[in-house]
Image (cartoon, rainbow, N blue to C red; front, side, top):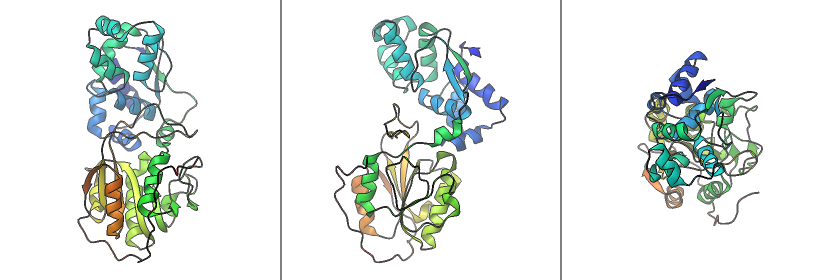
Amino acid sequence: MIRLVGNMLGEFVRLYRKSIGKTMADVSSATGLTVDHIHKVETGRGSLATLNSISLSIGLEWVGGIAPGPTLGARIKRHRLSKGLTGKELAQLAGVTLPALARVELDRAHISTAEKVLRVLAPKIRARILRHKQPIRIRDIRLTGPDFIEKVRHVMGEIDCDPAANPADFVQAPVAYNEEDDGLSREWHGRVFCNPPFSAWGAFLRKGHAEFLAGRAKTIIMLLPARTGDKSFQEVAGDGHVILLKGRMLFWSEDRKPLDFTAPFPMMVVIFSGDDELIERAKNVWDGIHIPAARSSPPQSSETVTSRVYAGRGRA
């Protein structure tokens, strides 16, 4: 274990990543973060939210004289409260502003600001390897919340197929392929919703594109990291409508509870459909920037999808 000194948060991430033979591209694939974001963390210029994602993906946790919690920012806040310190008192001791401390506790601050706070609040903090866990798989298990799923149903009707299913999720489609079933090797039919593992989102996007062009899937709605510069996105996005969602998304855990932190990167909805009315419903439901399909969609079935009011229909 290594104690926090200087830019030790980012530096230890870099050293450990290299020691296990992982490149920044490997971590990028596992987390959905860009290589640039990872580089910034490793040089002490990134955000706490990004640090949380990278630490989990490569199997690191922060221990030693700090309260438990889901994220480093949440742990700092809990530890401050356990010591009876007000935000103003800790900010003065750490030499940061009160608004800066508030951002730290929300995981929205730069790593350098968090390090100033930690040197005062938890000087014995250490980094160690997570034990008895599968970090990348844990990072991939992020369930789509029931409110979002009901919006999907409002846009395209019932969901016929979920090629990246989890037994605990809120979709519960008639055809659901879990990790063992390997949705990438199966055909997708009808109306499809897919929130794929972030470590394989590009492969699922290409698969969805192929299933739509083949005519097997009538409509596909995908929830993906907004990595519009990625090769996978650039290759297929011209055939789909894209909505860049505002803000950061809150996912749910396998015990069907909201996580204590939002995704560290923006998300987007990619829709493959030849139904103009469906696209209009999607634009009305999801707040964000709409990028229309650049190419004409292939002919689709004329079957009408009945639109329904989605409020209050979340599955328990």
